[in-house]
Image 1 (cartoon, rainbow, N blue to C red):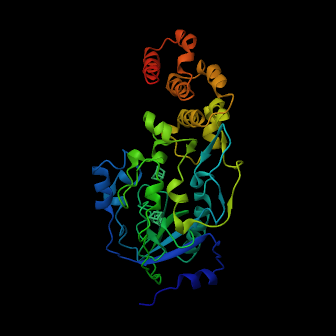
Image 2: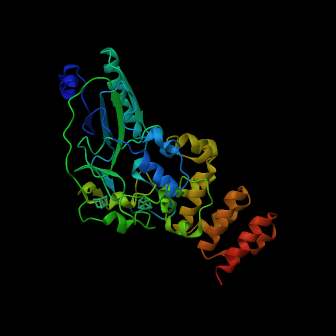
Image 3: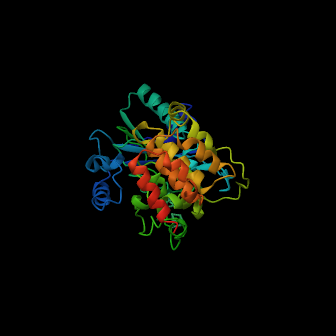
Length: 364
Ligand code: SF4
Ligand code: SF4
């Protein structure tokens, strides 16, 4: 059977790939399945009750999903393009992880939609998965030669490291497969050393129960030790990516002013509607922006400025109880828990009074 060369097809049809996008191709059926692996992580509760691809592992982890499909095209989008800001920030400001600085799935979706338009014109059958719980997006990455899975569980490519997003398109056409390669992390374990909470202690397994990125997207009450470990992270954690040698480069901008850092006070006093609109690409549990305000209170308590104590005294009264709970912890973090008796005298909530007593006992 004559296979179609995908690059030739693209140039014949004047479809030009942006330099941030790379392609891999796999012939199907592949015989691959990741269902057991996903199921095992779920059984060990290392997914920390996250849904996404864990909702239905027998389908999401299945590589050969469609009987009609003869090829899978794997798209990668390099969202950093060798531009990195240093990890510094000013007091009162919080950090957004690089993958969430803006909706980087948008440019990836733009290029896959160009493929869809072309394939429709040519009467090819196709099905695309991008950021979709029905498909484990790493399924074909390694055998397509694009790179390898690192001990951080991220997918790595030479010169790009882990700073990439993935998409998959199934097609009924027989495309020439790309050559698989033999990459590995070797003896490196820098991501494991760099993880602040030991979430990567087991090679190639992420324990989401310990992962800071997971906690910032969780609706659960965040434990005290995790709150401290979060530092000034507002959304996501980059530690295991920054430490990864294949993704490092010389173009780091050292500055305390990072355009993607957030003014944490402003987040806490914003309306929920404004926050949901401003960060519409974030995963926010139940689309309840109070979870973003919670993240901001923790980050501000870990990275306060000279106004934070006064700010907390002013806003405590107007916040809902679930956020007051975190402000109390913030008073404790600022070393002020014994100075707010008059504020607590006016508090009617039994649960908040109990929380206050508990935090006071932690200072003695
Ligand atoms: S995202 Fe952060 S907390 Fe999670 S595994 Fe990576 S370094 Fe650890
Ligand atoms: S830091 Fe080292 S061990 Fe971890 S994923 Fe990157 S190359 Fe692999």
